[in-house]
Structure formats: C-alpha cells, structure tokens
Image (cartoon, rainbow, N blue to C red; front, side):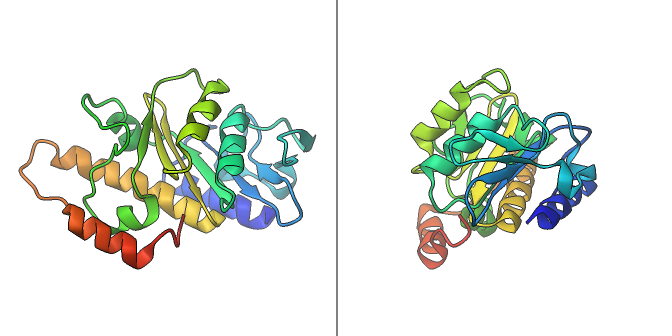
Length: 209
C-alpha cells in the first residue's frame, strides 16, 4: 500500500494536480487505521517511509505529523464505511468553479458526461472554512451519506472512493468536469437529462464510490 500510495501521489503531481506541497491523500489499511500524506511534503516526491500512520480514531501512531486536513479524512472514513481512500486537491478548475455564483450546494457540478456521473455522483459544495479547521469534517459528516465528492469553496475538491486508484481517477474526473463546465458556461449547450443520469446510476450504481 505504501508503494501504491507514493505512485498515485507522483502520478497526480506529474499531471499538475498537486503543485508544490498542495493536496493530501489517504488510504485505509486492511489491518486497521489508515495512511495519510504528511504535513509539508509534496505528493510528487513521497517515499514509503514518509507516510503518516493513524489509527481508526485518527490518533497519529508513526511517521511524520499528518496533514492538517486529518479531520476531513477521518470524517469521511467514519461516515462512509466502504471508503478505502480519499484525495483532496487544490486544482485550478475545481477551485474556480467553487467560487462561481449560483451553484446548487447539493449538485454543484452539472451532469455533462457519463463518467462524472459514474465516478462522482452529485457533488456537494461546502462553505469556506480555514484549511485544517475541524468544522470541514463536521460539514462532510452531515453530507457524506448522500455524497462522495465535494467542492470546498475557494479551496479545492475532496473525493472518496473504494480504492486509491478509484479515488485518484475520481479527483481527476472532478477537475476535468469543472474545466468543461467553465468552458461551457457562456456557450449554449446540452447536458445529460435527468432520465439519462438515472440510467447511468442504475447501470453503474456506486461501483466506483
């Protein structure tokens, strides 16, 4: 898991999704607890021994101090038992879309592609909070039964999925969907209809989430 964790971090960084020391990821362990990227480390250069180990209560057990967004990760693991990994990024298009006026907080990204529906479902928009504030975990806990993907206002995105690979793919899908929405914002276009969204959800369910 440590090797895969570092490989996914490097892949996200190589695509420009985690610049400098931004973003954090975590992965649940079959033996209990979870690994999380440490505070102040770049995702693109993580080594297996760099990772922070926390128990199921969120207590830091070994490695460098965990990311300041630990409460956010812990809230998702507690609220979504099937979650195996979480990716939080500060990508530009997702962050820009989180600042657009008039977004539906229960369905923040319009359904423009089937892949966004499959990997993200309805994306929730959370209000702004100072990064690392435990209130983000509280807000996510209140929405996590209905959502596995979130936009944090003026901040970035958070996605939960069953595997680390699925979480990374979902984070990339969210960024790409936000980019498409920004492109289409001033162009006449047609998104997926409610019936089309329902058909996709019926076929794929929560396979990735």
